[in-house]
Image (tube, rainbow, N blue to C red; front, side):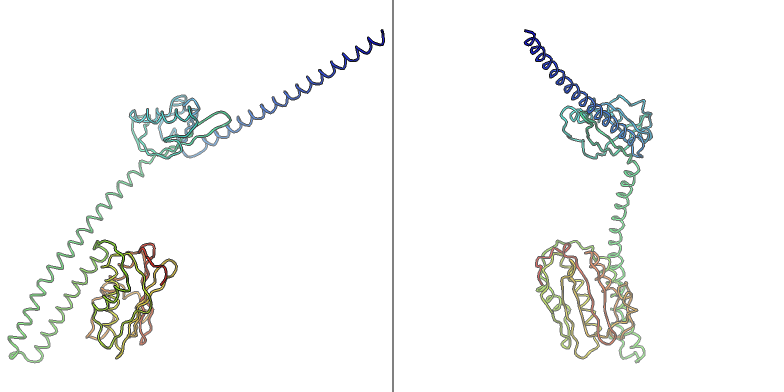
Length: 412
């Protein structure tokens, strides 16, 4: 009997020992969970403290809104913009910083975020809206609202900027642009009026001079006739200068519809318009692109370049070659000739209005054609330049960006 009792007791002790071990393991696991929870809580507290420290220290006006929709942090930069102390707004909804007519709408968006957890409306966007200072004055504000979470806590950070000065600058810019537009319009009208008013007396002078030469031919000696012809030449030159001024004022102003222009067909028409003499051959060296542009613009560029090459040709047998290549996203056009050439020191001068080079008295230009061409090319965000050698000829290059001219064919 003793042996049996002893055996039963050993079994009971074993059961107690096993239960004790289980309890110890459970307690150990509980302690680990408590430690992990404390660690997580401490991490969240640390992160929240770090977030608050950053918000307080930043130079931007920042406002932290808790998951109850109320302001929990209002940094010094925000105090400066809104003209109030943090104690005046802590625990209040964000709409206390807005005029009455805007409050309900924006507070509804914030509440919706905290209820659903999904950003909506103004959350995640930057908006321009009126804001309210503590003194009752309303100013223009730019506000960005960003949503976030720390553990199971939701929050919204509002970044506010006073954009009153920027708005004033925008208004000033709009006013300035309107003034510039009006000035340009007046200048355009002025150029047309002055051109008309100056051309009329010039036509009268020319008519009178021709009458004198015709009616008094037998009474004028050789010197008098020479002087009258010189007068007519000066009148013609003045007339050309006025017309050139008008052309320059209109360059880039004439608004027309952009159309697809096949330069393979269009350039030959321009060549016919400038009427090259029999001793000058004009050729198109390769296939030209089809571009989208205003026909008047491209016509003026080629017409001026071809006219110059023809006008100043000094060779018994002259040639003009037109070509185009695609280069770095641009169409690079060239108009080459075997004329007299130009010294390098004059390369910039020839593109300035009324700047002409000393040439034969029979070929006096106005110094407007190349200026007009340059203005139009730059209107399309291209460039124009020259390479030349005295006695051998010149090549004028100009570029047109493909993305600006809507080129159809990629292959030349």
